[in-house]
Image: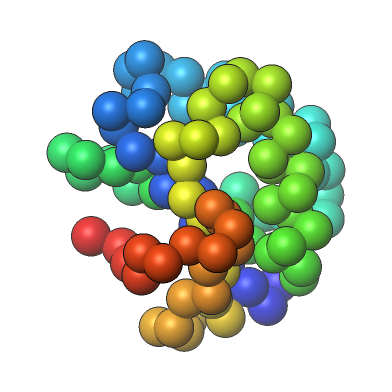
Amino acid sequence: MDYQLVIKFWRKSLEDETILPAIQSELKGVLGDAVELDGYDVSDQEINLFVLTPDPRRSFRRIRAVLESRGIVRGVSAASRLVGGAQFTSIWPPRSTRKFKLP
């Protein structure tokens, strides 16, 4: 897997963080073996879900369908980088002016 896709959930947009295991389970079903869920980290303001993938934009399109079905896509941002890299490329929301960074 060449890329790390990071899905950032803003805490204020989630009911609570107990939703994450259910989302991860759904994502495994949608993404299959083409990607690897690589865990998540939690801070006071955000929860970052890490996905290793050969094609971050294609993977995010599939992930977005799950997030839309749960009504939480507006509280999410996403970006990708080469595994081990420092420079992120924003994927969601479209035309984002906010620089993507990890805590």
